Image 1 (cartoon, rainbow, N blue to C red):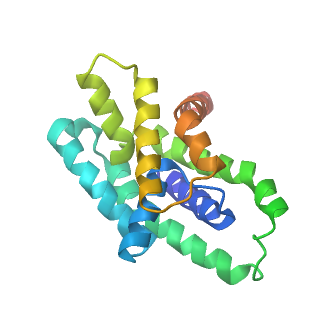
Image 2: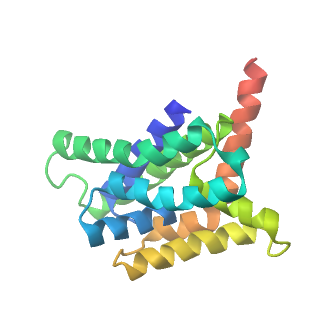
Length: 196
């Protein structure tokens, strides 16, 4: 769980640095950060805490150490790595478009593997990931996959309303994150069980 959250936080820091869009949840968080002038990490906690109340009210089984770890730590880990990248890399190193697009796929891979790893721990998921499951358990339609896409697109739209410019990453994650994370999670689970 801890390794997964750190990896996801590092991937998120890279996404923020290459400026090709953020995942939908972080898109909203960035919008709140720009509006309030609070740090990204603090706004991540605030946004997740609001959704956490829904999880507490409707499905306590989805709460675990992973829930709290992701909710409290992910944004601050991302803030730390974002700062570290600025300190270690030469000024303007990530500005050329060719560099940003070369880093795009590896960055997404780190982010998605981190997300799948912490979910595979079985110690709970973030409130953002838990709420669609809760909604899906209370409604017959649409399917969970369609509901997850609607959920992600809604957060992307709210982020845009707050002034965040979506990018290729935002759109890609909104439509493909669920299936990709599910596949990586399944792969990691099979691999870990095979090693045992």
